[in-house]
Length: 347
Picture 1: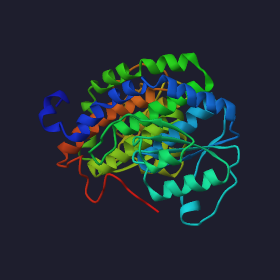
Picture 2: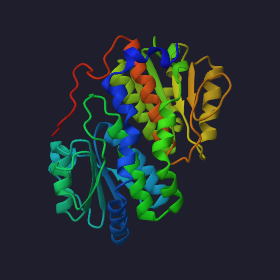
Picture 3: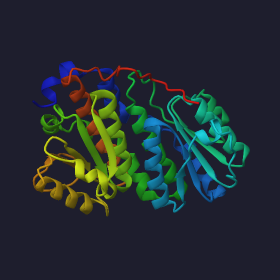
Picture 4: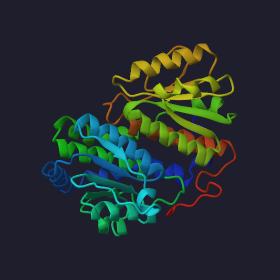
């Protein structure tokens, strides 16, 4: 059954909000002066390292930030553990560092504690947040609004994609890369095209599955992490994300005829390795779903040809639509996963 055939039952809030993600990016593009100011501030700062701090989907966005910053700004980027300050009460020496806090609500106590500690120790705080009046934005030295608007579904979609777009825009402004900036201007239209792609060929393998690996590498690792989380949240599947390099260690042995692998790739130096892995697994009889590359024996999912920097955004956009469909077909409500809340406030 195609995606179009089931739209009447699939128009959940998750479906509608994910479909609207491109408009959040369009709204961001109107803030050119604000992004340019952030870029100029980062050039003046010349941070010796970048520290990201986030939870959940926002932490997956931080993974994307790591790869984009390290490949384009050549600045070491690492993820902070919020509990170091919020639970253990330890203050680290982060003088001269950029501390990037990513959050939908900007209200989680552990994130705010980490920001307070980092700021007190000399870091410059950059907040990427969907709530302009949040405590996080108030505490930051620099901020970027996500412009995702209200997001009701528990499963974050448009706010995640808006976070990735904001990160890419900050990096483009910071490094003054005209090519990346030009690509980002086309992003909303490319997202609309990605949303229209039919990934229903993946449904027969996924509908009965209890376990799943989602595999990416490099800039695509963040997309794999986010897609795996959405399978968990909305489809009640045990889905785990791996780098294609890490998969070749212990996790590789578990894959089999009833344990599929969902592989995604962007057009860069990591693509060939993803294709080799797909061929190997297909020869073993593992059901392979593959987007962004080609391999014999795999179920190929259509993708938009795009720059590697924005390909993960487009792949997640297509995946959200398919996952919202799968959730309903498995008899679930993607807007209200059991035991979960929209805003998770951890200490």
